[in-house]
Each structure stands twice: as structure tokens, then as C-alpha cells.
Image (cartoon, rainbow over all chains, first blue to last red; front, side, top):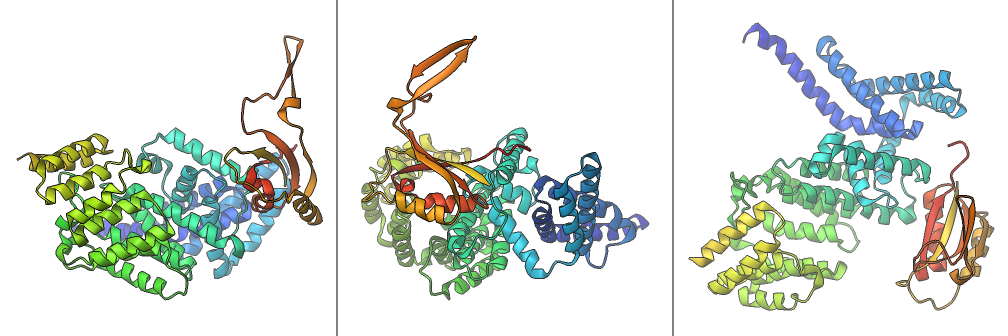
Length: 416
Length: 109
């Protein structure tokens, strides 16, 4: 080892330690500062400032024994500093009160910190905010992504996204959106709102090559399960995300082309994520409550994740889960997925009959997966000319380049 | 916080078996959450007033060409938006029409 490497090694370790601390503790520090100051920008700026100070100091002076407490103290002192400076400009009673509270809030009990994180999550996902703002605010404030990262993930410009965040924070303060965990009579409804935001983030990241958003959704779902251990639908969502994210390495090939599940290399599925998903699904199933939509979807994902090969998939069980899902959440897209399962369970002819009953649904009129599914059944029946027609229809409706490449490949197979 | 609750009609609203507005008013007044509220005459009786280049322009009808007429209002005094939402959701017009909650703009802002 050269002397350069010896000097570099502790630096790398400190940076890794810092990153771990930041990713696990940041949200708690931000959440507490928002509760005490009511000022989202101040809270985020002060925590960012503490992180930068740590990055500068820890590699030189060594990391502190309790990094989380260090970050909290530095961020809080910074907030006090900013408030004092504001105060000399114009004396404000409200800020004096905040400063008193900040100084008193030195040693908040653990439950308060957990509550603070929940307060933050529920406020970011409040139904009075537009849904795209809930997503952006959750990614910015809870996941700690930068504005430019979020803008890139949602294919929007950074100024647009900054505006969206600004308007959301303004509405929280001006419209009186409370910073709190909802009372019991609202908890179920608001929790399902939070789950919807996390699922939206996951779906936005699903299939994206870097898997960044999907990984953030997984972290958010884990955090929510930690904070709300008795919410079976939160566990259901975590299980669903874990089981699907476990397949991330096998969903596209090196050229970026989609690989269907039956052709994926199952040995490359992430076993530890599958185990995590199965564990949470078992825990969720131990409640008395009727099975909700996330648990049902996770059950379907479980059938895929635990089949040793595509041929031994328990399609009958999957059809049953879809039946249950359609009762809780009637939707033509779910009915289409059920038809796919019927096609595997009872054969392509049965699948085609299911599709016929769906062809009038207006929600599916421009959905490429309807003709793509029909094409797939026809191809498996050897009706290649009809299959080719259906693949062409699907091709014209396909939303992404990867979808079009996949359908084009299938079309060529049918034309030979 | 004070909120203006606009009560609007909605062509896609639900049919109501009975008008429970009075019971709602009694309940919200009893909780001290309602400052004032009134039902409004239909837009046929509305008059729009403008002054342009010092000239007074008075016209018949409302200023929006909308089908979602405002038929009344209530001023609510609530702790936060969740409380205002909860009170609004109990109003019969939450089913038959729709309600819009607008926070007052305080003087110090």
C-alpha cells in the first residue's frame, strides 16, 4: 500500500460512515427542525449546512462518537443563528418563541423523533396538495434527493420543479395544512394516501435503468413500516416493492431491451430482497383485517418470486388473487392482467375469451398492452398473421422506445 | 385560521333525500366554528360592476361563465385545514355539490 492510499483509506471510510448517517438520520433532523421552526426551507438549509460541515471536518478531525446527535446539534445551532440574525433586522415575537423552543428541545425523547418523521411524511402527502407536489416534496424532504435529481427523474425542468416545491411549501403554511400525525379517524385514509405516493415513486422508477427512484421507494416503504408497524397495507406495499425490485437486474438486457418474466434469469433475482418481501407479507397476513390491494398485489408477486422456473408458476393462485383484487379495486387494467393469468392457467383460447369481454373498455382503448396481450395469445396458438396485426396495433400505441423494440422483435418472429 | 367556504353546485353531484343544512349549521355554530354564512340568490339576480377609464359598467349576470354557480358561503374559524375539511365534509352540499375552502389572507402577510 502506498502512503497515498493509506491517507485516502480513512477518508473513504469516514465518507461512507457519513453517507450512512446522513441517509438514516437526515430525515429525523429535518422533521424535528420543521416542527419547531415551522420553516421548511430553514430546516432543510440548516441540515444541508450541517452535512457540509461534517464532510469538511470529519475526514480531518475524525467522526464524532454519536454522528446523529452531532448533526442535530450543528443544524439546530445554525437555525438559532439564522433566527437571531433575522431578529436583529426586525424583532419578531414568534421567532423568540421558536428560539426558546429550539434551545429547550436539546434532548427530545425517541418517540418524539419517530413522531416527527411521521408528521413530516403525512404533511408531505397531504391530500390538499397536488399529487405531483406530494411526490416531489416526499423525494426532496424525506428521501433527501436534490431538486435536479427529482427534475431529471420526472423529465421536467429544474425551475418547474423548484416552483412546484415552493408552491407546495407555501400552501402548507398559508392554507393551514397541519404538521401532525392524523387523528385515529383519519389515519387509515391518510395512510393509504402516503402508500399511494410511495407506490407512484416506485412505478416512476420501475424499469428505469438506474433504478434510483425504485430504490428510494423501497427505503421510504421500509421507513413507513418502521414507524407504523401495525399497518398491514404498509407491509404489503413494502413486500410488493421488495419482490418486484428483486427482479431489477433481469428486466432489461444489456441493450436496454425488455425481457419478459418467463425469459428472465431467475438465478439473478435478489434473494435477500425476496426474503425480506416474503417476511413482511407473512407479518401482514397475521392481522385480522381484510386483505388490501397492496397485500393482494404482493401475493401475486410472491407467486412469481417463489416459482423455481416460469413453468411451475402457480397461475391458478394468481387468477384467484386477481379475482380478489377486482372486488376491492375494480379496474380494466387489473382485469387485463387477470386475463393474462387466465391465458397461462387455462390456455390462450381461454385468455382470448377474457380479452373479448374487455375490448369495449374505454380506459383500455389506447393501452398498448391490450393488443400486445392479444398478440401474445395468438402467437402461442400459431395464428401468426392475426398475431402480427395485433403486434402492429400495439406498436403504434406503445409509450416507450424499449416497448416498441420489444414489440418489433415479436412482430418479426411472427412474420417469419 | 379563518376560511371562506364557498358552496357551489355540481351537475355531477349526488341526489339528496333531505336537506340537512340546518342541522349542519346548528352543529358548527354549537362548536363555535362558524362566523357567519348565507345562502345566495341565483345568478339570474346577480349584477356585475366594473369601472373602465372612469366609466361605470354595470351588467346583468355573474362574472364567470361557469355552470358551477356559488349558491352560498360560510366563514369558518378553525384550528387548521384538516378541521375545516372535516366540517366541510359534513355539509349536505359536499354530496350534492362541492365546497371550496379558501384561507383568509391575514393583514400581516
